[in-house]
Length: 245
Image 1: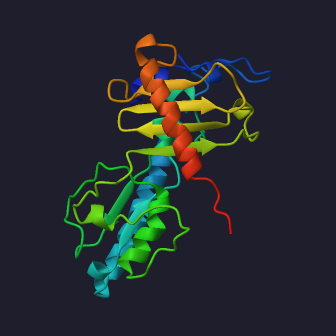
Image 2: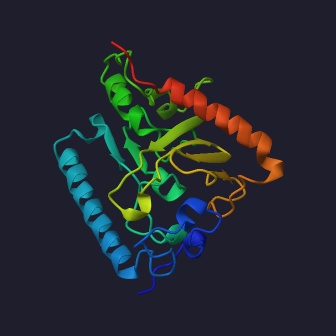
């Protein structure tokens, strides 16, 4: 069976100098560096198994009369590459395929069925949300915000309009050597700043280029936006600095 692929599966790191650089002992990105169909099919089978297990949990809650009084949350810690940009078996980079994760929340007494949220939600929001729904206060030094207002259909005026993505220079995979980065994403733009590499940063217009195939870092028309994104990245880094006790 041939698995359908996203448009950026054939880009092989085009417009991504950090991915295109020559690394001793590491083959360049290409058709063979992505994820094969057999691996993807096995992961789909794994997801089917997880779905079956979730169904059994919900069935048990319903049989005991506790389903509608239980907050059910389904999410993940990261996404995964299935050949996008020529990448496979990897999830540490800042592209959409790994930065975005699913989030499903069921709690009938609070959340209308079929409701969707377009605001930015982060994994650091999960703990404050559960504390809030349990009637407990969120510690002042805890990152994240309760999603309860969003789940009620209300979007606070001061809700985040950007968020930080960062990763250190890992050595687990040869291709990740010196690939540590700090990135900022807004509804329209994403800027990726590499820490240990020069001249390889990336800027994407996500509204017009959702598959991140055209790097605008050197585009003259995008320089004002680039400056704004650099300023926003600096603000987010300062905001996320460790708390002193």
